[in-house]
Length: 341
Image 1 (cartoon, rainbow, N blue to C red):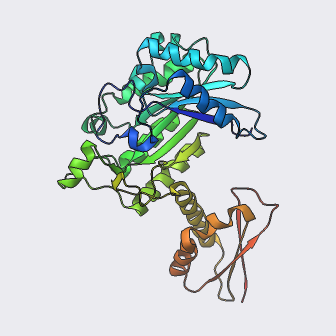
Image 2: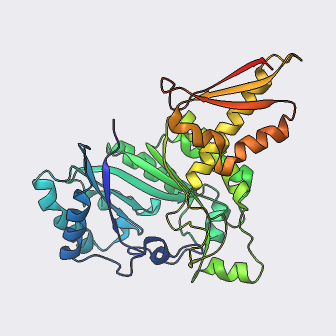
Image 3: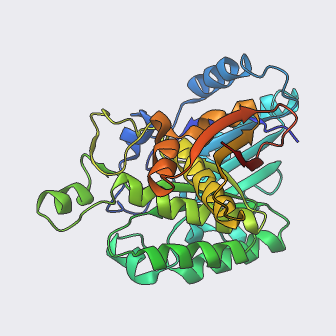
């Protein structure tokens, strides 16, 4: 099924009980107002509807805050503002991000009469020590309970995790992915931790109390988490923050890249190719490797600035590589052939 057009309505920090060490939603969302007034929200919806194209489904998404942590009157008002677009059929669903500890019978009652298509939980980690260190204010048990409650009420759940939080380790991040994949969310987002201005993390970084992951480290562990999620049928719908450009003035440090997701998928393809080469029967008469792929994914195979090809040549210096495209191949398929020089 084609992905819906999701119209983002940003509510930075709204409904949040306190400030997490890493968070500056105003920098991430580029929004200064915590809640849009009815006129602005209607204008945003109408603007995005122009980009619907051939997509048959449109959803409204409330992001950047803690939706179910909003005051009851604000939840009701935002839903009421969306109602005319639901009644007209312009919008078919509503999704929102929220903290696991605000998913309760009472808060879900507030949205029960609306077509909620996805509830995204800001999990970040399943390590309670890491959550406590970044002032997250909820526990891993809150996530397990929230997932169970959403399932009980027939609501689809998504999860959001962070790579490189203070005190976390590669093993801990992989464990987080393993646990969450076992809870069977519909979707996942993977965000590398960036040091943003006006955050506690920025102070820790300044005083040498926190060191962010290098870009290669963040890509590697994100690739492993991606594999875990997809293996369990969880759709990874985003990797990397929108504010992850290398020259973003709000980013002080961290694995920032405007195409972080592309780097992760390229790394996964590189690992696949290496394994396939190692599985080939070695002989001394063949030194040419032909890599066959759908033309749409040739750039993913090559990697950023041909990095995959350079890396392959470094690992297999006795081999020469050639790329051949075939539009009949599947999107996640890469075939490898060895032939005489």
